[in-house]
Amino acid sequence: MNATNPAGPPRVGAGQPGVPDLSHKVRPGESVIKAALVTAAVLSVAITFGILFALIEPVIQFFRNVPLGDFFALEDNPGAQVGAAVFPWIAATLEVTAIALVVAVPLGLGAAMYLSEYASPRARKVLKPTVELLAGVPSVVYGFFALTFVTPTLLNKILNLEVNFTNLLAAGVVLGVMIIPTIASLAEDALTAVPHALRQGSLAMGANKMQTTLRVVLPAAISGVSAAIVLGMSRAIGETMIVALAAGSQKQLTLNVTEGAQTMTGKIAQTLGGEAAVGSDKYYLLFAIGLTLFFITLAINAISITLVRRFRQAY
Amino acid sequence: MSTATTTAREVTQLGAGRSRDRSTGSLVFLGALWFSLFFGVAVLATLIIDTVISGAPRFDANLFTEYQSTIREESTGFRAGILGSLWLMVTTAIIAVPLGIAAALYLEEFADNNKWYNRLIELNLQNLAAVPSIIYGMLAVAVMALFSVQRTGTVIGGALALALLILPVIIITTREAVRAVPTEIRHGSLALGATVWQTTWRQTLPSAIPGIATGTILGLSRAIGEAAPLLVVGLATVRFDPTGLTSEITALPMQIYSLASESKPELQTAASAAIVILLVMVLGLNALAIIIRNKFTRSW
Image 1 (cartoon, rainbow over the protein chains, first blue to last red):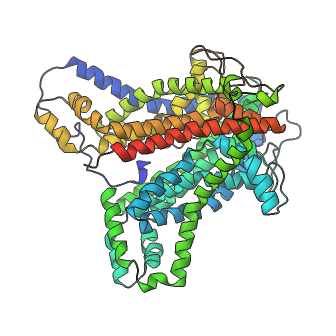
Image 2 (cartoon, helix red, strand yellow):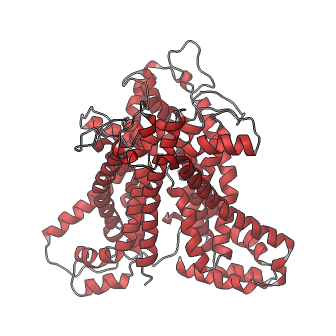
């Protein structure tokens, strides 16, 4: 959460250089405590390596039995035992994510601009937690909502669309609603951090509030805002329960969003929740998909961190 | 953040009420901003109202006392799931909270930020926070295999996955809370001869407790609603109460997931009622976190 928040007191912790250590007394207890704290911090790095090892070992097993070409393929090799082609899953994931971003980016940015530029302190104090409540709703609840309300009532009856029972559109829209608070909250931090001198300058030149917001504040915060969008995107890519329930379980390469298609996380959830015997190729395939997913989110997150850095250095 | 916020608002108030802010374009823009703010809230309201209405026929004691049943759909219950979720939450908290706070204290109070390894930990935490939750389930499976535990779907397996999942959240929010404690308080304590650890334990940590509590509760409310990692860890629908760390359990989100794809209307109603229970738990925890943040957080 703090990633885009450059404000706050200067970073001078007690252990920082510059604070002279005046105690020369030997304290064995202290070093034990410090060692324990270090261990806890190092554990976070261990988790990352743990993830890598947890995923890589079964993946090696997998590629012993299944050729690389079968995995990185647009469609399943008809002769193969396991339908391993990963691109239909990636395509479905990206389609759902794109729909989610179409919903969440304008709405999230709008909410962020209102909160940072227009809302009174009192209104903000109430509105911001309310928006954040959206992020608190469990994703399985959103998935159920997509299945039982958005598809039959909203898409079918109110908007009169011909959609399948499970479809990419409902999954994407609900996913979009889920990531609105992520984008709104981080974008608001970025907008609020824009120095007020810029707003004063703009207003002094005769611009009104809308022009100031859109042409001065938003461009000035653009790297923080784009980091917020990128983070929202990585949330959407990794989300499981909504797509497992609402996007369907047919593996297919389709651009028609009124049809269902299985995403990467959907495949993992469906197979692990059901059949795949431990040690079979089908089981190992899930780890290959998981590793692909891990690298995709890692790459996206690297972009986000770079953007935040640039944004921090701007002022 | 607070200084930047107030100044931004003071400035924007200069422009308020001027005629050029009442032009059509500006008003449309303001309307769009209002819409985007209330769209999400409207969805939340629709979701809650829709679920409460469709779950209403099932708000009875059976919901809490009966186990899940596909034979007697009209009285199926979520006893195993509710107990399982509570067990999971407590175990998760016991694993994740001390670890998260310890790591955060090290990074804020002891670590030298110019050292490469500390920067690595930092970068790594930012990355961990963005790892999809389903991947944490896979990691928990691997950790269990490492300790050669073959049984799946146990309390400890699920709690491990959830603890790994919320650890970055707890570390990041605790660091923010600790960072917000003014340096003068630490200097005062150090000047009186306290060591760095004594300062941390007796001065910094107590002052940061509201912030830490907020982050911890938010993390736990996320854990209680998660289903994806639990699915991977192998939680299935069981029909008995958890008795210990190694007993097999189910959780409320898992029961909802398994009911969601059922087509019988009675089971759909039961799923809606279970969602209301889950929402009360999750949104209740969220509200508690917000209350703590608004009430106890000091601005120095």
